[in-house]
Structure formats: C-alpha cells, structure tokens
Amino acid sequence: MIVTGHETQGAARRQGHGLRVAGLVFCTLMVVAGCKSAPVAEAAPVASNAPEASYEITLRPELDAAGEVEAIAVTSRLQGGLKDGETRLKLSAPVVYVNVMGIADRILDLRVTDEAGPVEFTLEQDDPVPGGFPYFRHWTATRDVEFPLDIRYRALVQPEGEPPGPAFGIRPSKGGVSGAGAGYMIVPVNAESSQSLLEWDLTEFGPGAVGVTTFGEGRVLVSGPPAALMQGWLMAGPAGQYPPAEEESHFRAYWLGDFPFDVAAEMDYAKDLYDFFGEFFAYLDPAPDYRVFLRQLDTEPYGGATALANSFMLSRGPALQEEMGGQSPRSTLAHEMIHMWVGRLSGQHVLTNWFSEGLTTYYEYTVPFRAGRVSIDEYIAGLNGLSDRYYSNPARAMSAAEIGQVGFNDGRIRHAPYQRGAFYFADLDSRIRAASGGARNLDMLLREVFALRESGEVDLTIEAWSDFVSQELGQEEEAFVRGLHIDGQLIYPAGDGFGACVTGDTATLEEGGETYSGMHWRRVEGVAPEDCFATGAAN
Image (cartoon, rainbow, N blue to C red; front, side, top):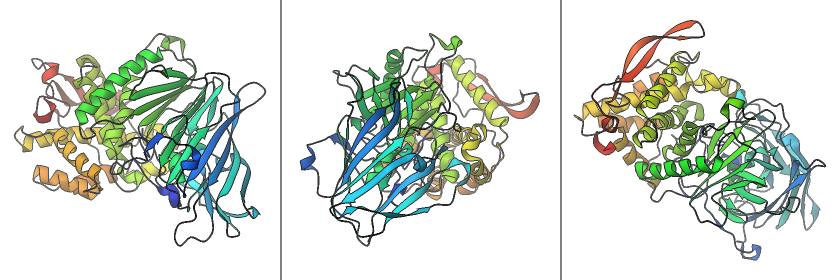
C-alpha cells in the first residue's frame, strides 16, 4: 500500500514518489507521484551553514513515568521569509490523516515567537472528507511576522483503540516511538524555505538509542518545503538495526518490538529481493537507498504495511502462537518495495489507485516467482487467493467513486481496485503479446513509459496511459480503462495473463456460503516455471 497526502492544503499538497533518495510518496494509501524525484536527504552540515531560507527542526521524544513515549516535543526555527504574494504566516496540521483521527487536537502548547514576541493566530478548518481521507486545520497569523521565528509544540502519541488504518499515527512501542510526520506535525505552508535540517534530541533514552527517518539516520538535510517532512517515517528509541550500524549498506531496517520471525534473516531476504527489483525494473539506475521500519504494537490500531518514499512501515499486533518461528509476510514486503518503481498516475487518488495498487499487486505475484523466490505451487496458490478475494468482494462491481466514499472504513472494499487492477494488467500483458506476435510484452511497455515519466517528458494521466496502450495495441484503450476502473465493470482476464506455465478458466467459487462466478488457475503441464514469462524483456 502506498500513501501520501494527495488532497492536502497549500504546500501540504506536495505529492511525491520514492524515485530518488528519500522523498514523498503515496503508496497504498493515497498517492504516489511517480514522475517527480523525491526530496533529497544527505549528511547535514552544521546549522550555521544552512541556507538563508530554511527550516530547522529538532525532535525530542518524551517519556512518561513508566518509560513509555507519551509525546514528541518539537523545536523549530524558520528562516528566510514568506513566498511571493503571501502576507501572513500560515501553519497547517491534519485533523484526520488516512484514518488517524484528531492529530491537530493532540498538538499542545503551540508557541510561535519572533523578535516582536508571541504570534497569535486565527483558526480555520477544512470540511471533513469521507472515508478517512485527509483534511486539515489552518493557523493564520494575526500580524506580520519577522524572520527568523521559532515554532514550538508538543505532539501527543496516538491513543490506543482508534479506528484501524495505516501506521501514520505516532505510537509508543518497546520503549521507543514510531509513525510518520503526517501523524503529528504542524508545518508552515507558505514559507519560501526549500530545505529542512532535521535532528534528534534522544536524551530521555538510554545509551544506544537511534533516531531515524525515511530521509536518513540522525541529522539530515531534506530538500523541499517543510511539508516534505510529513511524508517520512520516523523511529526513535532502542531499535534493532539491520545490518549493524557500523556496516555500510544501501538497504537498512529498524524495528521496535518482538516479532515471531527472525527480523535480520527476513531483511536479508528483503534486501536480496530489493536488489532483484532494481535489475528487473531497470529504469532507476542505481536504485536508491532504501529503509524498512517495523513495529510491533500491543494495542489497536495495529496498522499494516504502507510505503512512503524509498521506505515502508510494517506495523502489526502481538504475535500469535502459530506464527512463532515463521517467516515475515514476504508478499507484503515485495508489494511495498515495488511501489517505488511503479509510482502512480497523476490525478485524484480514488480514480487512479487502480494503477498504483493494481500494477504493484500484479508484480507482487509475478516478479518474486520470476526471480525464483516463489515456487510454482506457491505462485498458483497466490493467484487463486487473489481470484477468491476479487470475485467475492462486495465491491467487485462498484465504481471508483463509490469505493472512495467508503475509503478506509472497510479494508475489503478498499482493496477492490488492487485486485481489479492486477487482473487488468495480466490481461493487458496477454493482449500486448498477441498484438505483437510475441515480440513485445507489458514489461517492455512499462519500462519505456516509466523512463519517460521519470525524465519529466510525460505527465502520466489516465489519458496518457491509455494513449500509450492504444499505440501498443493498435486499438482504442481509454473507453475500456474507464469502464473497468472508473465505472466498475467486472473483468475476467485472459487465461495466459499470468504466464505460459499457468492457465486460468472461469469457475464457480464459494465464499462464506455464497457462490460466485470467477477464475481458477492451474499449472500447464510441459511448461517449465523458468519459461513461464519467456517473452521479450522477461527473458
């Protein structure tokens, strides 16, 4: 799942996708702008070397009497001035962010000062958005301000027992804290600052504590406006690390809590898969540094898995006895990492996530199998599970708008575009192979399109994507795309859509005592797994 605040206000509207080192992304939750580079994080110089227009921020987790993090104290300094045409300083914070409720209400002791003294504000708030999607509270200064100015506040952790949803809320775990910037930050949205300096104050933790974000370990510079900081994961406290801190690596992981699997061993697997993805998708060369965050929570909401730029968070509840000694959710690891290459279409999330989530789901199943990390039996079982979930989904024929209205209030309905999109791309691969006489396939088309998007030569909208496919097939695609993904038509993909070694047939499926018309997948005898995707670029 990929998420970003695609419908935020002001500078918080900034969209990004993890196509370069540390940046914005919306990976399963909201939006990923695959055509833009992410904000760059790099080793930070001393603060005196910061540019004139900059945002310097220090995060200080605070512990309660029991040693659990209860808040993050934020001290920041904004230097420079306001953007051209702006007259009064404006701050914004989410009221709701992807089903994390009451974020702005948990911002306490807000104090903004300049040389003239305290700054007072008037308040406005967006109208609520259905489905748990973001809306914001806005603070507007009642007078002109002088720069530099200081912004201080405390952000309380997300309380237990809130509605389920992605792991954006800051939650205490194992003596530390984790979450995302969007889960606690109030940021200036009309400042001219284009670079932030983020650092940690870990004095309340014991020796060996870490402070890390999507953007890097410890003290980092982050390109972009202050709102770019909202689109990063954070973790602080006595976290485990992979590999050890002294070892250089382009792939790192951090975790809080006790997991039923060997985290370091599973991160070995994830790193190996990440490196394969870099070679397979090819157009990001080299693939950027990547960070995985894992947390185990003792109370709900537990979270799930969500990607931001060049990183993802896996958040879960206490381990069940039958999980002990098992593997990590490897399919989920694959899904979240693949988001970095797939990106998204430009446009409203509810109308475009069939692309970001559907294509990511398609590759979640096919690429690990092609890499030899999944057996043919596991591959077929996965495809049949995908079929079962799609054809029994109450949203299988819902329009994109109807699904968006439900949003994060029903995970089963929200995932219908993932499933529908995966079958669309499987079917499209079959159609491309048929139209080209086996000379072309989906991988080849996508690598070309992604390279154009990455270079900025194309704004990948629904119309632009449909045009690429129309040129590839020699027939009009947009009406089919809109009928399927926007209006909610049902799809039965081509039987060879998932490769030559498997075939799909229509079948009657049963779920919860009800029957559905769906697809069943089985092995094609005589075709070796290594020959399943032997067309074109898949060789």
